[in-house]
Length: 547
Ligand code: NA7
Image (cartoon, rainbow, N blue to C red):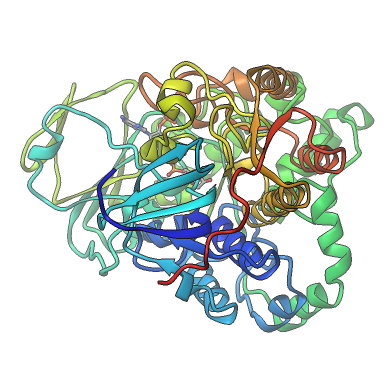
């Protein structure tokens, strides 16, 4: 750490996305702490600040539920216009939130936290920023984002490509024109599947390089009418309660078992839910789609049949047909993805049959050919969930770095704390529900827990909260046993770390969102079993920050 003077706060919040903004608000306005936020971006938004590629939308039927729930006034005053919000809509919303709750004045934008170090003597974290400044605080809240560190493939010669190259997760803020261009898109996860139909509308040609064929369901995005939105507002308290108990969304899930229906009835039901669109086929067909392999294969076969129906060229349809268990990679919602392959200006390259060998200044070279291009889009995803924490790589007790601790496994307790890293809280950390839950609501619930924890410390004259390796091991068992009841771990995906070469393989999320939040609330109510506390060594809070 440098000799630069250190500004003192009660809490530092890293990240100004949904999670970080809410943590800043609560800790400042409810607990009365002096709080400083930092974000490397030029404004609020977190993931949404960076993911502004064409077609970027929330990958769920979002409006008005992919939003904060804590303020009924906010619900009443914000008008969502489509059922599946665009990235731009979400950003506008978060800008409004930042203004309405006067959050900007406490955030340093364009400022990355580059290092963070715990000091046992002072019971404080000191962080260093990309501007060379230092700040110190009792509490370090890491709302660093589950989908933040872009994964760039290391194909030979990729940097020799002379044309523009954009990663969907780091999209430029200036408009990108595809007009008349030959575009290569590598990657067919949510980002690629959302971007490809949009790019194809104006590009001269789009060549899609696909490593894994994906299941994608029609989003059936539509305008959200004023009356429908008002209906949600009028019923808000009920809906909010349902969100708490139904995996983060207020939608009822089915209680029907596959055995309740004949194969013909089941097929008719799949058709109906496909027409409804969104995640209906997954959550509302029959109980246990992600648990019961036979049922899963039946639903998967139904979607494969749809792909064959939509895509006119049988060879392209074959390449687009997934070969893994339905929904065990992130389920994608699209707006005309498979239909796009019926256009004359779109070609699919299956990388399993024709792998990329290298790049030249003007083309992609695959085993079987050369693909001249003017522009390259990398829709290759993220070092998800753990990557953003490891980029900061905080140093805890005895100088141990998080990267040492997480060398082989991403151990946490409750997905929020890591032993040896006192007073550090993660929002959406590994082994919390994170991306398997509604992220804004999950952030609210994590923050409520952190708030309760800080109150507990202050009420009992405690200076630190830490956990133990035993508690982490028990948590690991709990998270794994839940995951192993599902089909998720059977598939290589970013949920299991398999998308990043060399990353430890581990199911990174707690598979039962609502149950998870009930569990952590009970732990707080029970006086925080599994945690260890130390008395506060400094009598008073530091003087309020001067900047
Ligand atoms: P994803 O879902 O991780 O998708 C990345 C895609 O890129 C996926 O098709 C990958 O294939 C492919 N990929 C990754 N690395 C390579 C290399 N080296 N070569 C070829 N293809 C590659 O990321 P997204 O940004 O689409 O979505 C992330 C989440 O954001 C999404 O789930 C939503 O929650 C929002 P693979 O399947 O690994 O074989």
